[in-house]
Image 1 (cartoon, rainbow, N blue to C red):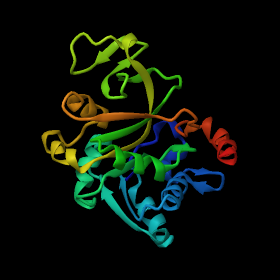
Image 2: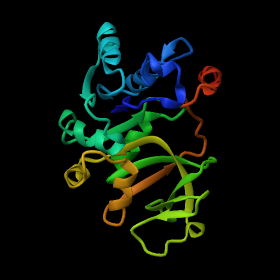
Image 3: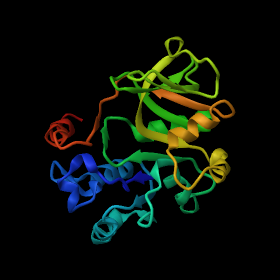
Image 4: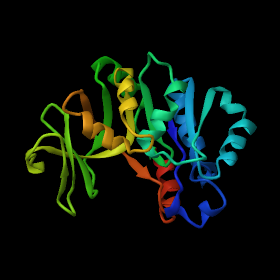
Length: 241
């Protein structure tokens, strides 16, 4: 699943007239880069959620004959559902027996998606989150076995966890990449969530009951193309991958 429903407010004024997913980088839309990466990794079915200027994304995919893949649209034009709600709405479009790889449309990286997905299958975990050591304000917190225990904002000192008194200093603090795999084993839990919620809220709510594993990729090269000033840098970045 490709998250392409965001408003792209940090990319204004470009996103006043086009959705973030169609913002060009190195001559092709962000959506193209992610679709091609998934296709090269062997994925055959993709669900794309849409909200802001949704018809432009639908038209783009149609004009390109869906790149020869089974690409389905999860329509959120009436209400933006955030990352967790987006997955919940799209559940009927997934194969009910297969884990789903989730990928933000504005993330470019050197990760081998096929190997990452295979690792999720072999690990038999409820979710596998691609994480790395990079500077950010918000970190996921993992124990020595890379099991998710909580979340912290190092700027405000806020800690969120089902475990009382959790000390971030005692745990691995790793940055989430926006790439993860969710097992069908936890699909039923989405029924207990509201229509609109963030996927990190979901992970934090159930991490004491289910195996949500962090996958630390030591050589991860990743760029979040979320701001205007990152577009030129992204073109250079793509050339290095």
